[in-house]
Image (cartoon, helix red, strand yellow):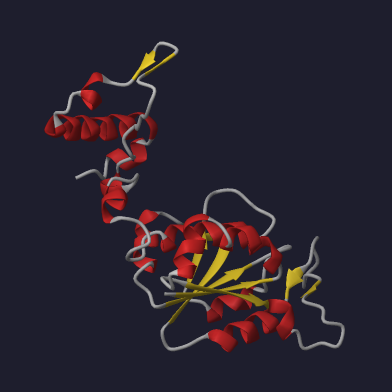
Length: 223
């Protein structure tokens, strides 16, 4: 998969692309991630990427022209273009799975008071990572890229993915490791019993219990 990220702040991605699973996936060529600087496509002589709001209002708005030019510089017939915006559809695991099957993603990061509304004529979908506002789209883009990359073939073992939260609309089961007893808090007996069938049942019961307690909005959709 190829992912192109359109941003005004490429430096924010340095640590993200150089550590952990993302770096390994890049090194193994399981994913290609490119950073496109929107400023490189500014056409005015002052290299100004934003301007004041038509109709009045506070803040500055990113102009549509440099964003579209940056987009067109990398877009192909296989591209799916994503605009990160608080007014987009809320992102979830189902969307991550769907996007992980695409060949080429282009992710546009907004900033300041956002991007000129006309950018929406050039994108395929708008995504929000939650009901809150951040300074820019760089952190949300990392969230989206991470959630998608880990689903690509070979990046993480299939067994690990199958037991994660939100599969079948259930949260993940609780996990434990050594020591068996920590300050009086003990690992559940069933997990050290060696009875793999009972362990499987216990974990499924815990997934249902945890989801019912913490996310009743999900439990209604459990098959």
